[in-house]
Length: 448
Image (tube, rainbow, N blue to C red):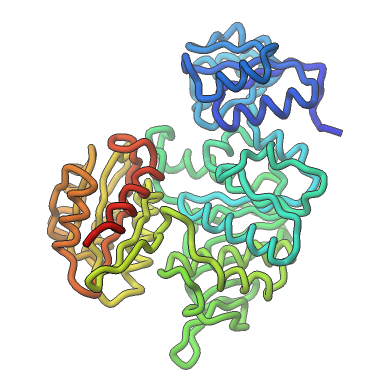
């Protein structure tokens, strides 16, 4: 039985991927609803009209009177709750909700909920693979891959969900079995008033959580907890009680739990300190929901990383090339620069730039000075990054990605690595970060 009253009127606001999943969910349950979108021609409009011709849809500027006909608005993550029409509807008593709220009300299996400024897709994928290795019927999605509502099924034993701050804004009570915010750094400052507002949105993931996982090297990931609530930690330091971390023995580094070595770090196929942290976070989450270490460690040994996330492309003339196009903010770029920089003998040639989304790039300076030989800057906000880096390293500007690759190759020495980690969104030059990463990988693969 679906936990949704069918005698109330709902409006789905936003007709993208998650909006269409809401349409399917509501239609299957006989709920009375309509659809609105601020765009004249939203992505799923043709699909809606073909499959659900009876559903009223309004495109263009939001009509407050129309919105106020609903008891509840399911708002797309892409639309800020600060939108005046939504605020006006809320002031008149209309409830603002979203697809994750509805998913949580209807999910019958435990939820592993994962957010963070960076690495959430990697950790979500890893935990999903660990659960599958243990023979669990697991569903993985949310902000990654399949929309949450499309995952609902009575035979699922565990849900592993990646959740963005945008999705969490409309999530009132998630009730996860275990929840984590992996890390917090400035992102989406074009949507939030500042880091505190972004931090608050992220921490909605902990509402109703039975257990929490905390990054002990990032104080902003620790929620206010009720007394006796189980808390597991991860970090690159040596672990203590209820903690995952790194231990060193006879010159060998190990992933460890409490005082027990689990596996040598060298057995991981993914490189960099940030990937060691991701592995430890996944172990902590999996352990919290009872996954056995043998299945989890087998998954770690097989994991080769996700596309566009510090993905090794090739080696040429002693230089490795890495595609980290998913690094659309400063924190993600820092994780890649420090993670790879600490794990290699040579230096990095950093390719960065794009649409900075109002970010402050000054946080890059120290790590770039320490780990990079040069910075090759592209895109709309190349000048802002150049100013922030100052004289930390030699800088060159490139008019295109191909030119940036050619310049990087000429600057690199044997033992170095060329790293595309833009610290920016891609929309000034590319369709999305995937296209940027694919074009980078393709251009690198054909280098003679």
